[in-house]
Image 1 (cartoon, helix red, strand yellow):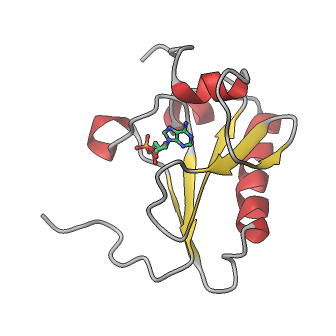
Image 2 (cartoon, helix red, strand yellow):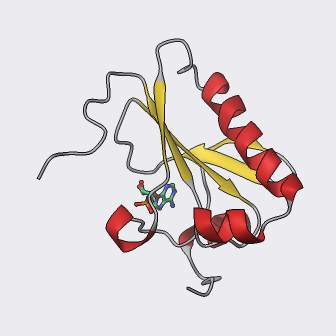
Length: 120
Ligand code: AMP
């Protein structure tokens, strides 16, 4: 899947629409999810144009990948979920329920999160 530069997170990265920022460094941006599914729900995205985790791990430079995962851990600390526990989610593609085609991981916490995957 080709990267769509008009996706909503690309617009946030270009400053065309606002976000509630938690953290930013040279390679990553983290901001509160607009529709939180848990008391703490933050998204971490790379600044590079990557559709998905597969695209990112195949094509990003090591420095981008390292910065991204360090940012995930740092942001989880910043938002105060590490002591009680939290969940990192990377919805990928159609079956994964990915809605925004720019790689993002969800950091969710602040309560017990229940089953990892709902039973059908
Ligand atoms: P996913 O289903 O994994 O692609 O998740 C996309 C997430 O992006 C959802 O949890 C949305 O609530 C969130 N989202 C969509 N638009 C925005 C926005 N403008 N600012 C913050 N979060 C957003």
